Length: 284
Figure 1 (cartoon, helix red, strand yellow):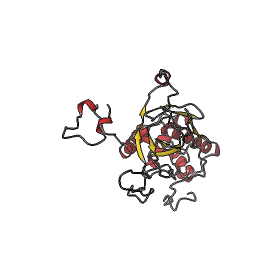
Figure 2 (cartoon, helix red, strand yellow):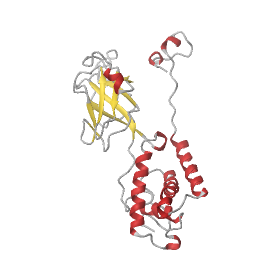
Figure 3 (cartoon, one colour):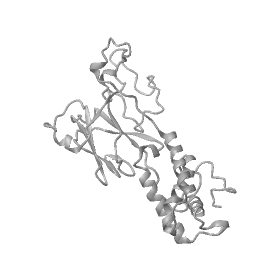
Figure 4 (cartoon, helix red, strand yellow):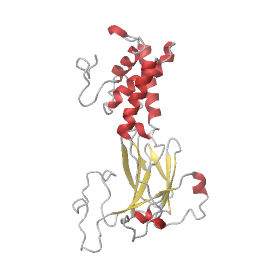
C-alpha cells in the first residue's frame, strides 16, 4: 500500500492517503482489482472528484466535524472582511456564520486564539479585578442576533448608528465574506466572535493524507465509488448506494448538535420556576 499504511493499516495520526481511498473506491467498480495499478488518469480523476465532493460536504452542517470560534478586534468599521488575508484571516470564506457574540473586553487582554476553549474563567486567564465589585479585567460576552438577509439589513434606517452592538448580518460574498455588526461598535473596546464550520480539506493531492476522523474514511470510499461510477459507464450498485447512505448516517449521528429551544421573554417571567439568568434574552 502507501507510505501511510502497514498492510492496510492507516497511519495513527494522519489516516489513509488520498490515493488509498481513491484506489479502494475504484475497486468497488471493478477497476484495479487484484493488485492491479489504477491508471494515472483514473487516479487523477478520482482525486478531482474527491475534492469536489468534500467541497460539497463543507456546506452541510452535519458533515462537518467541528465548529470554530474566531475573533477579531473592532476598529470602528461598519463592515469586516472574512477570508484569505481579510480582517479575519481564514483559508476560505465561510458560507454561513452560525452564531456570533461581542466580547466587551473590560480591560482584559485580547484573546490569543480567538477561542474560549481551554479557559477556566477563574481569574487566572484574565487580569485580576482591582476589587471584588467592578469586574474590571473580566470580559463579558453578549450574544448578537442575526439579521437573516441583506434585504433586512438594507431596511435599517440608521445604518451608521454607533453604540452597543446587538445584531449582525453576514453576506457570504466571494472571495471575501462581509460581516456587519449593528449598531457599529467603537474601536478597541469590543472583540467580535464568529462561529462557523471548520473548512474541510478540498485541495488535496494524491499523496496527501485524509486528516479527518476515522468514520470519514468509509464514507469517502463508498460515496466516491458512487460518484465515479458514471465515469466508467456504470450505475452505482445497490450495495454501493446502501453503504454510502449508511456511512453518511453514521457521520450525521456523530456530528449532530441541536441547540436548546429558546422561549420569548414574555413567556418566561423571573417568577417562573424554570427561569435562569439570561433566559429573558432568548427568542424562538
